[in-house]
Amino acid sequence: MKYRGMLYACLAATFWAISGISGQILMQQFHFTANWIVAARMIVSGGLLLLFSQRFNQKKSLGDIFQQPSAMIRLLLFGVFGMYAVQAGFFQTIEYSNASFATIIQFTGPIFIIFYEAFRQRQWPSFQTIFLLILTFIGILLLATKGNLNQLIVPKMAIVMGLIAALAIAVYSILPRQLIMEYGSLTVVGMGMLIGGIFANLVHPIWQVDGLFTLASFIQFLIVAIVGTALSFFCYSQSLQYISPSLAGILTAVEPLLSLVFSIIIFHLAFGWIEWIGFLLVFCSILLLQRKM
Image (cartoon, rainbow, N blue to C red; front, side, top):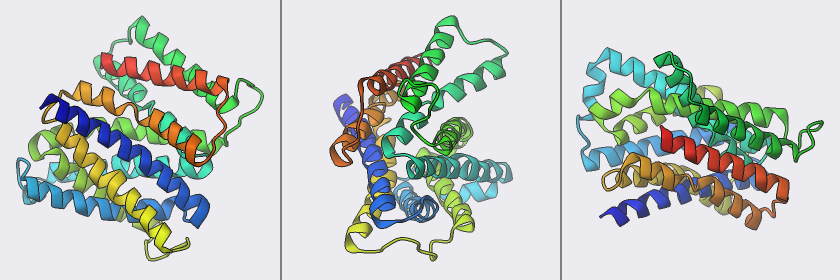
């Protein structure tokens, strides 16, 4: 059973990595915008996750949420500042740079969780944690500058949107904890995704299509919406039935590495030794930080 859980976690990481690659293809080859992709993706995947939640009957029923005003308020905040902010930040980072950089910088989300816990507990992080945070910052700096501190090789907006996505990861992880305990992860994330999708459609309605719709682009969109969102989260949720959250977190941490490998193969991404050092600093530091959380 443990191996089944590990397989589910690895599949989730693989599907998430593939999603970013397909998103980049939609933007570069078919000229879709990040805002349209997010609006369409969240509506489709949110609906699918809610169907999954009803099929697998997680904890309380979906209707129970609407009878609790406090739960609804928290769910609305989670949908907009958690789910929507993560998706919008991630895909706009891809739009300004590439899927690999977006995945790596979003991977730093645990840093904001550490700051939140330190503030909540009125306690400074340990020396080891601070050291790992510094290594992470150095890694991002190397990735963004190729070691030349006088020049950024990625647009400033890519860094800004990537950090917004990372911050939203912290909100996404902290805000719904109680809701998930009561209603189940598939129900809460599905509702959050749907609420975020409604908000995303206020920013960019899905009927205002700004890309080239062909069979190939439709397939890429299905990969983003179904494989990279609904199916990936379903696999991650299923993995938690067989393995601990910490082990699942470590296994899904291969997502940035997979995204980098896919980018090198598909987009012929040039990745020099300085970028490899930066990537390994970020990857290893965050992995160690996750084990401490």
